[in-house]
Image 1 (tube, rainbow, N blue to C red):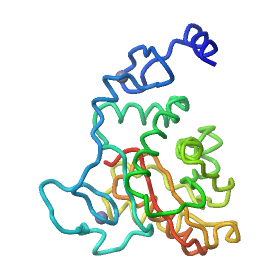
Image 2: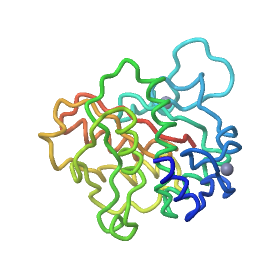
Image 3: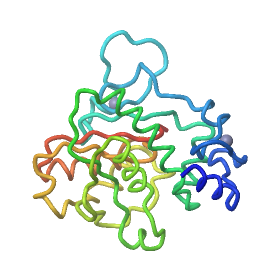
Amino acid sequence: MAFGGALLDLLYPRVCGGCGQRVGGEGMQLCWDCLSALQPVVDPFCSHCGDPVEGMIEHRYRCGPCRKDAPGFDRARSAVRYRGPICDALQALKYNGGGHLAADLARLLAACVRTHFTDIAFDAVAFVPLYAKRQRARTYNQSRLLAVQLGRELGLGLMPPRTLKRTRDTGTQTGLTAPERRINVENAFAVTQAEWVEGRVLLLVDDVMTTGATVSACSRAIKEAGAAGVYVVTVARG
Ligand SMILES: [Zn+2]
Ligand SMILES: [Zn+2]
């Protein structure tokens, strides 16, 4: 195994997904400089959506958007802030076939789950589906890649393919305001196998969470189909 890895390194030198430097050593695809530059999401944050707030808050806190319009998920947490090298790593995961990064990123996700969801017994890992046409063009779905690896880390199975589907092409959420994002993804997801979803507690995985509109819309569809709980974990928080 180690020899195979060394041979692979010789044939295909590994470069860091965060900065493009060559990476040596065992396994990791992110270099030490980039790993040490990551900023974990720490208290205080919204108890529902996990959005960090500046300053000190003593009591349990829910952010304005969560109080105004409760998200579709039961609770969301993210591993690190969407700043610095993680932006490049996630960009590489999404667009440059950076599937090899998924295992490293899933370790961050697993650490986040083990910190924030100790009270939840999950039945399976779920992911945010792409619109079928987009999935064919892109060939892979970064959310699913992360879910597969996170499932391995946590010893959980994966939601079967096409259990949850995106019913229309919602385009990119980039550049939209929070209300526009919510409207853009409203009712854009549907569960096609309610019998699988029913009664299950799911861990929904995605790469980045900004306003949470997408994971909220997915969660709502899953819960309406009868899931007992939907909790969200993302690598980064915008
Ligand atoms: Zn690096
Ligand atoms: Zn919130």
